[in-house]
Amino acid sequence: MCESGERLKNSKLLLGEEVLKGFYYEPYNLGDHRIYRRVLIMEKGGLLGRIADYKLLDFIVPGMTLEELLPLVKPISDVMMQRFLLPGEGKMIKKSFAWGLKGWAYIGFLEGGEKVLDDLREEFRRALKPYSEGFE
Image (cartoon, rainbow, N blue to C red):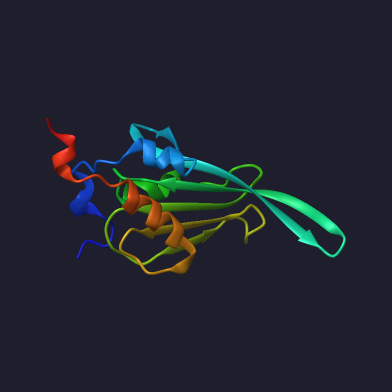
């Protein structure tokens, strides 16, 4: 099995952008690749109320391999967590920036099983179109 999604790199996945927009994703260019990004603002609370806000970025990356993506994953100012979902199979990679002080990145696969990416997997699957819908 291809752990990094090489098998799917050259096959264009057809994604319903309207479905992804329903999940608050927007098209985003990462180099020459078209991916989908969503920004979530999370609130940390305690007994005294709101303590802090932090950002979470989700990326659905349909046309890249793990080898192409890894050099592009870097800490982003004011972002605590970045989650990337690639097509294919493989084991999730967790990357910390400055021992977690500058955030974390989780890179997983559509056919993976880690719970931290389950919501992205469901949204990716709902947005996938059958190949017959892409051709006229």
